[in-house]
Length: 160
Image (cartoon, rainbow, N blue to C red):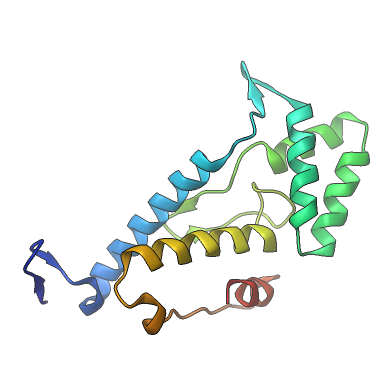
């Protein structure tokens, strides 16, 4: 493997295992950025601030490209029972984070679920990071694929 003379680090473009290390580092950085970017205070002294959750859900709904998840958020906001509040906290009380297999989760609305809006946000962040840190990233491009799981092809189109 070729060494970068300036830093004595391997050039990750030459090695699959080094690419895996870079992807893991990107996943970790993206998780930190997502956690730091959350400007809504939904937890106060260990209790859920439902007013902050409602605001976050309303903002999410405005930018959600998927009619199914928008309708699910609308239903949660209209629900006035304990079950709706628990579901609202479950969907909006935290964010999905990257793990060793990437970002994965239950399908549904909000930042704590897998959905098209989340995929678009994560893709934008990753593209920005790659643009700032990888030489010739725009000319080199990326590969985006999908499998047979529900929503996978829509997620791939949104990422592209």
